[in-house]
Amino acid sequence: MKTEMEALILTDTTVGDNDRLVTVLSRSSGILRCFVRGAKNLKNLNFASTQPLSYSHLSIYKGRSSYVIDEAKLIRSFYNIQFDLQRLALAQYMCELAIKNIPENVYSSDLLDLMLNCLHVLTSTDRPPELIKTVFEIRFAVLSGSMPDIIYCCGCGKYDSDTMFFDYVNNRLFCSGCINGEQSVCMLSRGAVTAFRFIALAEPKKIFSFSLSDVSLHQLSDCSEKFILSISDTRFHTLDYYKQIQSFT
Image 1 (tube, one colour):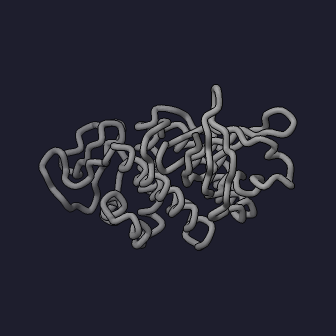
Image 2 (cartoon, one colour):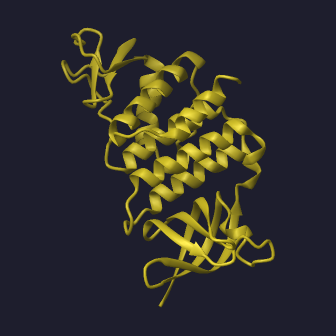
Image 3 (cartoon, helix red, strand yellow):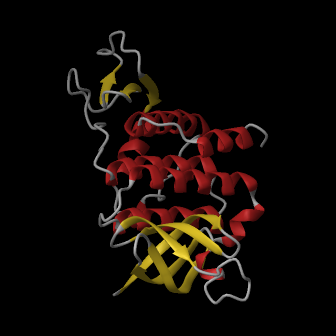
């Protein structure tokens, strides 16, 4: 029995002489790993639509021990990202984050839309990769069930302050008067805290509708990265590579 679904191709691996194993993020079934028969052949009808960072309509059936893509029709390709090494590295990190955190057979439409939105901004605008990475990490945490507790100081309930501190391990916000020797904290300016709240709570289509100074962006970027790493409790090799590329730009 075939199943029809929309999915983003995240990664691929060569299997044998002609086949590929692709990992996809689907709307209806989360992360799936599927074989594509004969897909190494450039003449194969499924070649272009099953390349990494292709968003496609897939026809999938369950074989004896694995899923198999029988037909794929390309909806949109983000192939042009390969010409910018830093943006490509960021896209690969986003894919690894999804693979390691989204289970199989879980409805993932919101997470797929987040991926597509961020890839669109990454490939079609001049927004800084650091900003796109920050937005992706925060919203990914929210959609994965780890809403950051960044509305009030957990000590005194203060909402606004020139400087606040986010405990990225214990998911708590402190004002400067209540911070008391906590080790796993990031210092955030007023602008960084405001952006943090906006990204976490805004409507999906508006998550990039804000501006931020370079200093505040660097603070928030460091904080969102530490928060997502704490939630995931794993290492991302693609993140190491992205940061290595970033250091040369």
